[in-house]
Image 1 (tube, one colour):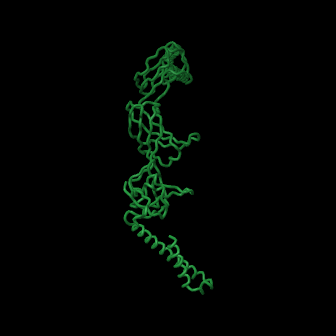
Image 2 (cartoon, helix red, strand yellow):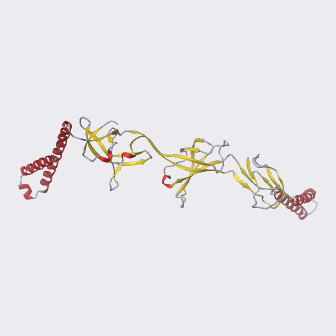
Length: 381
């Protein structure tokens, strides 16, 4: 190698001497630059030829010992990045029911586990006072209606005063409003199912005194179920409504796929996550508060150049690189360092944006023990 350097130096000196000293003395910058470029080209050519000669000599040297490496061929193919998150099943129709008025519990109509329809009575409170008031108003209303009808006929015949007619009308309308109010009060003493579902638990007990805010029963519907996922904020630009994800309900042994129905815009300041919702079918398998894991594919490509993560190295400055095998003769070749521009990574491989071409041979086994420009021998495992 020292001989090679000496030959290059001598060649460079000879060319420099032949260029003439007058231009240098005159300080002609353009001429000196041209001379420098010419010398650099000569030196590069000489170094390349010397490297080729050294490699040929190495091939002929049967006693030489070379580091052995294995190779893999860089190629383009399918690539995807995914991540796993956990979520909880939520229901828009999972409610605890409370009475709207106070009163003693007269009757509990349902039991836990019972299927009920929308509007079905679940619990009845004692509303005897309201019922008595309701009966009294109805009696008064019947009388007011009769008086109004008579006064109206007289008024139409031109008999009686307008004041008498208006008084009868006002009394009738006032009693009608009182009746409507009493009927609403009577209805408040009855707890009904707001939707069809299953009674999960009954809290009310016959004979107890109930008041607003006291739970009577919990009603759950198999409809309106969704899986809510807390996703790290780094993925907020990668998830879209309609995107397919894989779900695993380990507790019931169900694996399925579903589409994202909603992507939240709010970042939780404590967990640095945002909410993603997935609508679930109403098939009776899924229950509120059930846990599930989701595999979310946030990036996929059908033709991208990738490299196994183990073959991507980093120098002290953080630059990523790998070593490529440039073949020569009889299994020997030169090691060439390639600076890489990387894209998305998954657990196994990383997308290579530049620095490597499909079909090139990358050093696999032995990559951490070779150096740039070294001559190595490739072997098959």
